[in-house]
Image (cartoon, one colour):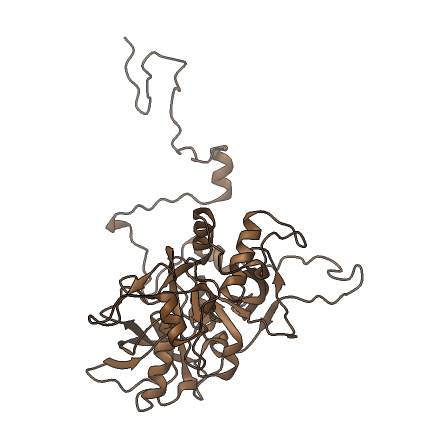
Length: 432
């Protein structure tokens, strides 16, 4: 049996084997070892403490050949495309991006600082308060507490739970304050007490560079989105009465002979024109506002009986000029079958209904249902001593005689309340 020679590695008898190994290990990226040795010096040091970088007698560290070569390298600029931008002719492009500048607050030019607060609007007797109601409650609070909100024009509220200010508010209890306010919203039958809680969360530098950090939320973009639409959302500003906000979109409420007339649709609907705004960060962290034209369908602000005819015509798929149901065809004997009643109820879900029988005192209520009972067949007792009276009789006694007493009633307001009104005394509210 042959002796094992030093530096020789024997295989297991499978395959051809390798024979003697070279003193220099092959490169993990392939290639001839002699060629690699000519391109770069071999690293003879190890990671042990004994192999530290040599130090000269004067205390300076000796530089390795690799470091010396790196110092002698110079940056070379990449060649640009020849005659770039010279072919063709220049044209003007109109884009829906608009640039703006973010100001500074001091001579150090460090950028704009903003203070953020958590703003909670709640009522212990109501499970949910929508964004429109929160907006109304907050700005009513601002107008009634000028000692807290000294400069309303320096506030930005997102209609949810975030408030921005340029100056820090003077709150009690180390940045906490609870304010109670009594007011009556659109769907309230009487004034209610609402609570606005403010909690200071910190000051932030409006820096657009943070918007590109992975996994982080941009405070600057959130603030810009809020500020750009504030003028059209704040009820304290006269201009906001002509606009309706939904998320980041703002829609112009149509006016007779206005600049943005609505586009009529079937089923008591119409299309409003508006715009969608969103803050963007351009090249070099340049602040931009993207504005897009937006269209969406809203319910027409028409009397409820006209809305009933439009809904029934749409259910029958009637084309314009071929309608089957008209307001002029209704009479005192008109009734609705179950199919028509269900169809009307489906189209009224979630809408605000406004009363029309009390001039100067009309109210808006949230729609609940179209009940199967009519004003003629529904009776109630005003007092325990009096005999029951029908809604049609009560209406004739207090207001006027109903033209359509056999049409079903509308259940409006809170579900636990028994508020039933005739259709002919209602219309679609101005508020979407």
